[in-house]
Length: 367
Image 1 (cartoon, rainbow, N blue to C red):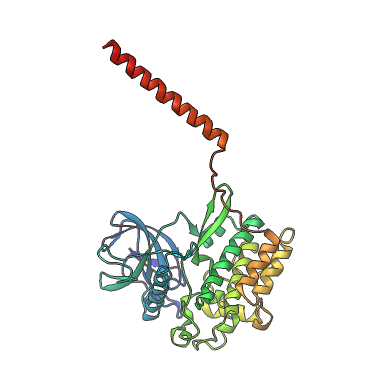
Image 2: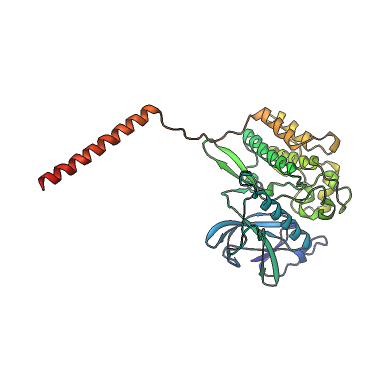
């Protein structure tokens, strides 16, 4: 294991991490688990994605593949993960409800159920870790995929963002707000036949509702470059909850996929500088114009800094994108064989039965 700062990316192979930057909270840097590390009865296979508030790992739990999400140190990160786990558990109460783009929770221990425990705790050295388990997927974070291939085929961008917008709308219908959508929070894979991207939203942001946002809010759960301008006005004061704040995050991710790099300055830029860039609207210039003009307009309306001029809902964004790209292609189900084929197969089976019976009868008479 090692220590790693989620802000400046400095790491240390031991349990101590020192940073000379004044605004770098090195003393609160999380333990980053490495392949082969064991946490209780869970073995770490690899890191999947790193967020400001938590890390997601591919693991083996009781020798079975599972994804594990671990909260970073701090009571606010811990409480945020617990809210997320309870929300995901409640989604499984109705067995008919399907949420394929949200994590499907698993019991955290081999001896418990989700009704008893939505999340687990375990000691790692002198630290108490809070985590939950969910079904694994063969996917990578959208952030990592964009580093490998900065600019995608425009239809892949559109279809993935339709799915993302639909997912956000599902959260809003349940009364939950994200307020911190980033490319690190979406795990993406490509289906074959047809070749279409799909996602799993492995992080629900602030994971709060309008009734509890005042007590749940804290801005450090996400890099400030991905916070809406209205969230940066009052610092640590709770913002007014609204779906348009999540629409801004959706527009930001769509814009980033179009330009192929983060919309605002990233890397070693301080949080204060990143927040100021958001307030000033200092976005990277849209250099890709030939094939993205109608989609760019959708991204700009959704990511409008002025909340009064922003697209109203995530469902509206999904509808606008669908008008450009059409519905997301789905894998065709294999139909039943034609009646003629069934008759030929049935006749062949009867012939085989007759020949086998005849062979047995001849063998018996000769014996």
